[in-house]
Amino acid sequence: MKINVLLGLQWGDEGKGKIVDVLTPNYDVITRFQGGPNAGHTLEFNNIKHILHTIPSGIFHKNKINIIGNGIVIDPVIFKKEIVSLKKLGLTSFNNLLISKKAHLILPSHRVLDAASETSKGKTKIGSTLKGVGPAYMDKTGRNGLRIGDICTTDFYEKYKFLSNKHKEILKQYNFPYNLSEYEKDWFDGIEFIKSFNLVNSEYLINQFLNENKSILAEGAQGTLLDIDFGSYPFVTSSTTVCAGTCTGLGVAPGKIGEVFGIFKAYCTRVGGGPFPTELTDETGKFLQREGHEFGATTGRPRRCGWLDLPALKYAIMINGVTQLFMTKADVLTNLSFINVCTGYKVNDDIINYLPFEINENVKPVYKKLKSWKKNISNISSTKDLPLELIHYIEFIEKEVNVPIKIISVGADRKKIIFRN
Ligand code: GDP
Ligand code: IMO
Ligand code: MG
Image (cartoon, rainbow, N blue to C red):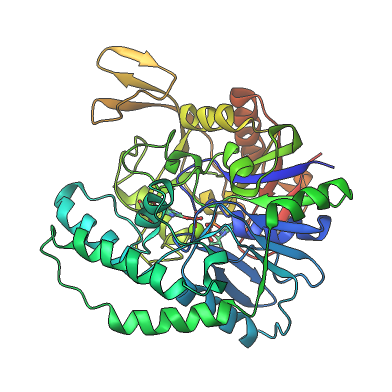
């Protein structure tokens, strides 16, 4: 058996959580392979709206195994809060939730470092979610990090103190006030809490599951344009968000990757700083933000909105080897007077159809104008009932990117979904 991967093709928030929840019944195991509580994955069903940050989006389906892979960074405080809120929704047993011993810990001082670094950048700040994700990954690659497996070792407190003191030294170079003690208390509380979970050698387990022909879905976080290598650097996150991250974030060989599901919104959004060639700062941008409820699931910040960007989408498809596309939030485009799709960029006097190294104000989108529709599509469950203009929009994208769009999502709820043959 191979492992299927679902990942975002834009700047995150494409609707990964919703679609993973929809697809979970087809799988035995759901795993997260990168990122941390910077992610906010929203699930809606039975009038419940729930946001997950660290826990895979298969958690609401009983009897499915959910694994937090080695590529993840975990904040014990946030993890505990997530479990508490799941308990409030009636989940009683978490025997099916496994955590890799090789996943890294986000320390309270990582959060402070994140905030201090962002503040020092002033106008050029990245717009981090300030969850300490960047500094935690820096310590991982710097070979200083603490891992989940460390929490059960006798000298864990010394290891913690050593790293935390190191951070305090670094913080001296910033004129940044902080107080660790409150968060530290909750953090150690969270550490004790995590000890009651199944802490596993997830790479062995996942490969064993594959050998036993169990079906596995890997759930990406963030999006391709936020990838540390291929995103709009430096306005990116600190992990490998692309398909290759599945291999390092779970311990599966490249040949074990099966289908790669690329998910994109019918338009674009971005939260935080950085280039966004098709951004709309006008009434249409406000319309998309309002109709799409475009506010960050983790920070509540308004998301910047703009038209669909095909050169960026093609780039993401190439980097990930996407085999099937899923388009979300098609319903949000209803009632616009027209729809623009960016097919290339004008850079000075040249028209290019690739993502340039530097995306600055000289990179202007070139648009193809398409017809819109007025019909409410949020209750449609079959392609044949979709307005012709939307079918044209879908077919236009498919022709441009040469990958079939297999799912159209028309609302936030689990049930608002159309499968295409
Ligand atoms: P993720 O990070 O990729 O899981 O996405 P988020 O949960 O951060 O953001 C997606 C938002 O859009 C959430 O509020 C979802 O409930 C919502 N959503 C997902 N799919 C659709 C859709 O097809 N239509 C509409 N209107 N909302 C959707
Ligand atoms: P999901 O999984 C959207 C953005 C932040 C910031 C940059 C770096 O819900 O799609 P970080 O906290 O990693 O230092 O932030 O990346 N960002 C996201 N944007 N969705 C996310 O996750 C994001 N995770 C990080 O806004 O611009
Ligand atoms: Mg999100």
